Image (cartoon, rainbow, N blue to C red; front, side):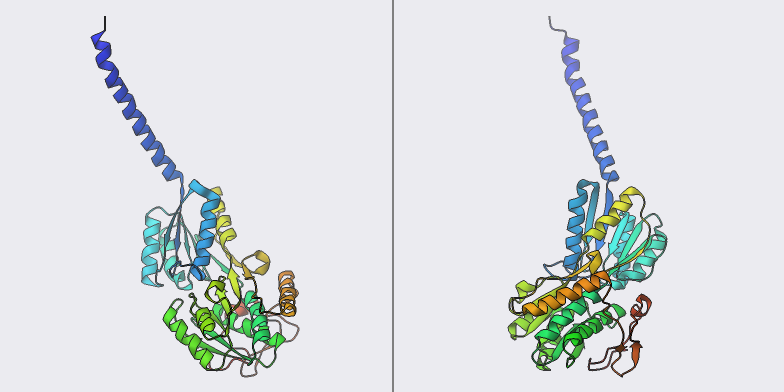
Length: 367
């Protein structure tokens, strides 16, 4: 005989056990989600498929590949510098993101302000110089790659005129301009260079106008310190040469693109997140160069002669082992004033305050 009590209780028991299992699963899932390290990235321009932000995002992808479900990553792109940067940084911090990377110079003061109100969150700022107990900064010696790229430009120009599209007159950008010029002069003392400032990190229209202007002024090799591919495209269309920046942009100018100064952030992001997971993170000021794998050159165009490639490779090796410094004296400004004496190298502190053009650059530096 069937026990009516038993037959009525079994479904209820199953239901109860099912509810307990579902609740347990939800709690476990919530606990696992809470266990994940939440990492935020703030970018100044669209990610796209080339340029400054693209290279940082390539580093972010390497980070996610390394740590998988140990981390939860959120990306915010096209965030203007200033008040908007502060708002999104604060929003990430208040949403539980314990490590936040900001990748534009103008994020420095907003991140510093937010860092002071979220002492348990760690912040990493690219290309700045201010730190605090929970804010570190990181940068790359872009000028090392610029010097090598200048050697290529100085070797490939036929008219001895180079053109440079620049964003803002801050030390980081001036280091690149001057190192590029010094590299070019090391292989071609007759070189001259014009600079056009666009006062934006990412404005393809203005960057294109600047590149066109430089070409109209006689430049036959163009480079840029801005985020888009506009300068490379302009060179390709006008049958000139270009040296790209941030990333390999050869697909935008298969004939024009001689090489590119490339940036590599993945190893740094992995190292910092690992230290956060280990509980050993500390704020630092990193300025890595070619020997650290943070700066390199993209493969050179077949149009670059073998002897030029060999010279550049030799110089790269010397920069790597410390026997060649792009700002080795004598360094003279455009008015003839000696900035670095023969036998000396410019110090990191002096480079961080750079506010001059080297000899051979035409026009006045904006104040």
